[in-house]
Length: 411
Image 1 (cartoon, rainbow, N blue to C red):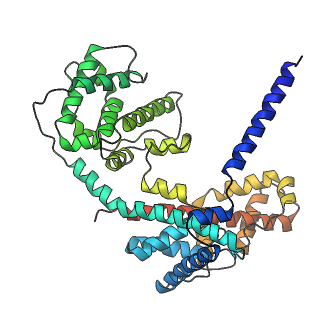
Image 2 (image 1 turned 180 degrees about the vertical axis):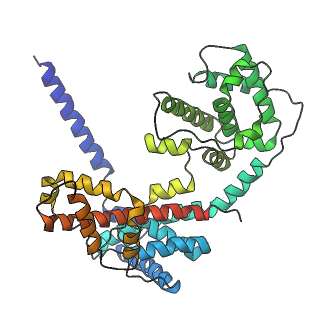
Image 3 (image 1 turned 60 degrees about the horizontal axis):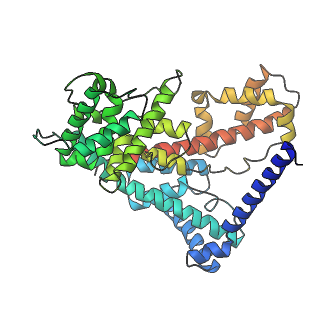
């Protein structure tokens, strides 16, 4: 007779075998991937080379040196402030999503082809979002300045009932049935349906009123919400949890997701999502604390952050693992020192100007050993250079992500 341990072992083995079978079923060879794209390996390699050549040629045309990655990141970020042409968008999107194709020494044709396909997909996606941004912003500004009509329309009782049932499923809004809340839901439905513009973005309007005014909606008789106020920005405390607000935020976003899916096909989804990301920092909180979910929208900077890759600097990966294992406290001391960004502005400039960074490694080493003795000076200096390169890589990535805000302009 099998014991509980034997049964668990059999179940574990079956689960592992199922995962292996699933992986085998979904595995695609490079040839499969290229065939799906209608490309031969030779065609893909030519496209990859042309992509890289276009990037480097445009840098030269914009008088940006091509031999210093940190300088390129700075100059392209600066370029987005002055110029938003198609060339600038290409340089920006290609650089932000760089995966080794632009600056890596890729000699394997299959690897180059696959890197290009991945790179191109991200560039195309981000480019389309950047091109759509002025349209979204213009429509959102029109919503904010809209003066709603005062029409005597009838309440859609069916929609009132559905919205009411949906709302009371969220315990942050309501704990038990309430006629006042039901009547106020009816007034909200009436106000929204009386205005064509609000009908286009129903999920956002309903979400905003139910989340921001849920106390008034549930307690004040004959309450009529001021919908234009719902397009003002609301800042939520997202950096700390008081053991209540994080649960509340999650409930808010679950409600939005439910509303968004319920009205799919009846609304302007892009404008609805743009209203959602432009009126609070709740979506930012979601992606910092929860598993990604398509139904929760992202702002353009959030999309840029999500698609961004770390652009490796030359020789940045050279570091003795033995040193790190023996000196973990020295590592913490160095990282604490590097956390003061203002102190390292001159180092950033040195990297962007192609200067020798060894003096900065010495400075970091001297600061660290004041609190943490480290007899292996040579190893410590090498490690300090490694950390400085990592600091600069993250600085470059964040610089480019922040530059995405330069595309949020109405045209």
